[in-house]
Image (cartoon, rainbow, N blue to C red; front, top):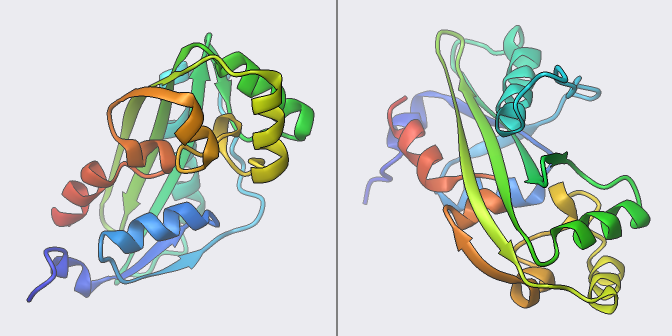
Length: 196
């Protein structure tokens, strides 16, 4: 049975990410790929960037960093995910205290998770973002401490993984793509890849 993404067989597909979640999600789409990761890519963005555009701006910056390295038969996927709550753009926490602060801020509120994605070849580039609205139930300090100590969510935007304990115990609602909250909006990515 042919894979619906057999159109990608003409490319060497590269995922520019160290994220184990992104690797798993892309594999779940049935894409044959390798991972690459350049060190020290500048992920800063202008202070005037609207919060909902930050992830897309960073994903495009990552794509530019790889631009001169892409050969004619390669396709590279870059992505960035942020959490936005009370107007604050939350990336990855820097330590335990920062993770706990983020989770206290998210508790009992609705926030947005935005993933920006860029798909690039030597001759073409497509960029898009996906937004998911997530409702957190109130969380006690004991619940927050338990999660941070057992799951160590320091590699996750907003200091949480929806697929982990906190997602089961603390997320009361979601509008949009579940996979987007994990780090790749799979339906949107599938549709875009099918057009390459």
